[in-house]
Length: 162
Ligand code: FES
Image 1: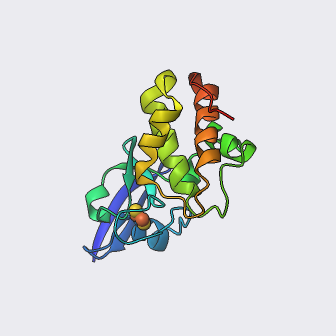
Image 2: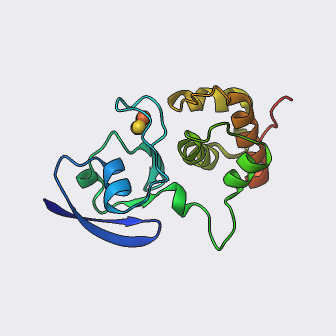
């Protein structure tokens, strides 16, 4: 066991974990942040995406120890001051989900995508960038629509075709 310290959702946390503990296990099992989902064990689905120092990362692809000292944001940390984040709001308003299992990873990937591309984001780019996130219900149309609506709200992007 090793004591691992990192900042999660703005709060410094420490917990003991085995060297082999994945970051996604550390978040879910040690910290109780179960909003980060596990949809596979092969780095395929993207349900486990979190932000590490601002970058979108699949939390099943790295060890918790590798994230020590980092600034981690999970879906639980996205909303602030009792208000949904614009991306969360856009998913809600555009019904960007079906079963909802992929939603946390989609929203974390989308937020980073919007932060990175800003106003240059368009539908083709969103679809290409979502390559690493799988929706098992195949509800991609409204997910893409939600992301473009959020991008427009956050600073301008082209709206999705109806
Ligand atoms: Fe990490 Fe599927 S659980 S990519």
